[in-house]
Image (cartoon, rainbow, N blue to C red; front, side):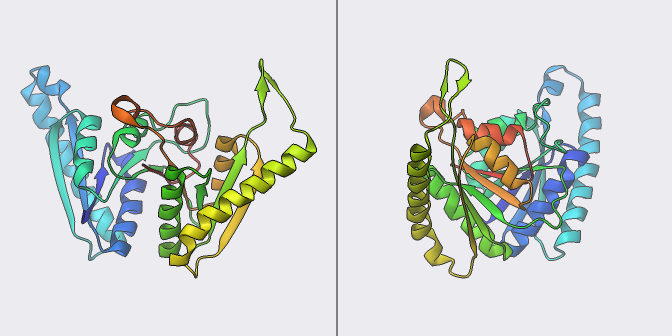
Length: 281
């Protein structure tokens, strides 16, 4: 069983919130924290030894600051650091095999979709063998609740298990969401007939019933808030997550090629980060 969380520290600005979030979770779960920065191997290929040495010196200072930050959150935390030269994303994916979770930061400060946030997180979340947390530069103080998208699939069941565990750990409610989009024909949104909406609402409630029955017995003290609604799942989940401390989604990638791809919902959530987001396989 993995005993450490892995944090990819890219730079001070994007890494600060990620380190703080990871330190709090690692401390509460009795895990260690491994902070790693990967210097792009392009510097070595360029043949500039001086540039590489200077980069390593800057990285040493950055990681020392990250350790200090982590211990300001949890003084007793076992923190280790590592600097290596390689492919930052590919190496983090490889290192994920021995980690409880991978945590990376994002420069996102809002859900503005005009910018592509989390490109680094997309690839790592798609290929990692362990859950991946993408932590934007968004202050979530005062927010409450752990959001999980539930669609009845096995991967959404795993995401719900993870979300329930986090809600229990944080002493916060679990917010289980089931949403379905309007049908689209030739670019036009069509409204469902009222009776069809009623049927879909009933199906959505049954989906939540089954999923929650399988999970909440292990977390009897966690309050559950249910949302069953018509709407684009990405939009609904993102809006609900605006007031939550965490959102958990599943990745449906399968097979040798598909495991490097994210499902449309998890990809959409990472593209418009509302707060700390965990992708579970």
